[in-house]
Structures are given as C-alpha cells and as structure tokens.
Length: 248
Image 1 (cartoon, helix red, strand yellow):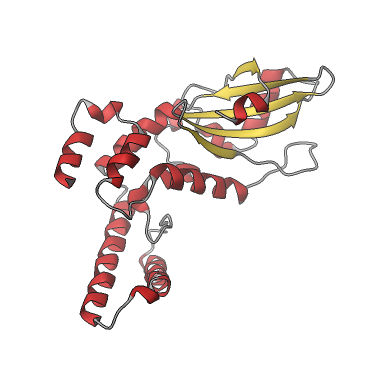
Image 2: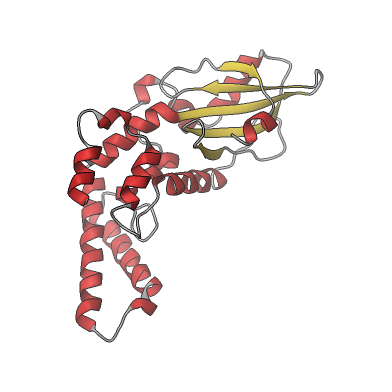
C-alpha cells in the first residue's frame, strides 16, 4: 500500500494536480495515526498569530490574523477582521498600510521573497512534526541537543501509560522515535526538501489567500482587501461582508 501510494503521489502527472485534502486522505490509508496536514496547518497558523498580535496606528486594541481552510473552495485563508477605515488615505493605501504593519505577511506578497519559509505555514510540513509539535532548531549543536533531549523526554512522559513490562519493545519504540527526531533534525539543518514538502509547497502557492475586512463607518459599508502570494502589494478590493465569507 505504501509503495502504491508513493507512486501515485509523486508521478509526474499528479505532482502538480493533487490537493492537500487528497494527500490527507491518501496518508490516512497508510496509518491510523497519521498527522492531518490540514488540521495541523490550520492549528499552527492560528497559534502563531495568537502569539503575534499587533496594534495598528491609532487603534487601541490588538489585532491579528485568523487562519481557515475552505474545502469548498480549496483555499487556505489568512484573514483579519475588522479594521475601521482611515479616511485620510484611499482604501487600497489603507489596506497596504495594515498589511505592511506585519512584515512577515507583506513579504509573502513579493515574488522576490517567495523562497522564504513562513513560520505561520510551517504546520503544513508534517515531515517536521515530532510528538504533535513543529520542530525548530538553532543550528547550534549544544542548543539543538538540549531541544532534542527535551522533546524525547516529553514523548516518554506523554506515552508512559502505553509502556508495558516488555522493556525490549519499550526500548524499540523509544529508539524508533529518536531515529525519527534525528531524521527531522538533519532535514531541517541541511534545509532539504522531501518530495512531500515539494508537493505541499506547490499547493500552498496556489491556495493561500489573504484578506483584510475594512469597515467604512460613515457609509455603513464593508469591504475586503485580497492578496495572493507573489503577486505584489496591490490588493483586489471588493464589497464583501464577513458574514458572506464566514461559512465558506
């Protein structure tokens, strides 16, 4: 089954066409404990922005992006709601100012930065997951060794009730997990991409969309500014209420 799955995913014809939702389904056939690309990608993205809130100009409240995968549209939306329009600038200019207040997001719009990996999208790369967590390293052996040891210890603690009196099997489980952690470490430090990484990146380039909902209080109108990665900072602006977008 695993061999057939490999052939299907990485044939020249399906490499570009296969969706992340299809990948999740195919991977679920190989293991009952598979990690969902969509679920982990969305969770990691939301956790990132929850920890990286910011204040825009005169706003007295913190704002942040929210991440959502739409199966209906096969889109991964990163959106913000809702910012009150500043009448001193045009709608597009105001949208760009909001976007540029978070450089990591605005950089994703520029083609010259398309090679950069975005921390808020790291959850889609499940090859880097260990014990339900994205692994990050410093490329400093002593620091990275501490991270590895800590993650192995956490794994043992979380799985302590699964261990039996058969210490041979227990040790095999731990040894296999250590091998997995070392493989992830080597992959990240050498900045190499697996075939699965390449498929996921190809799909993310197609399906990620950014939105910022803007409220024009005086006119009682709501707009959305929309961007596509690599297409520049000029947003596509349209009349759109959040309620129209919420259930997609």
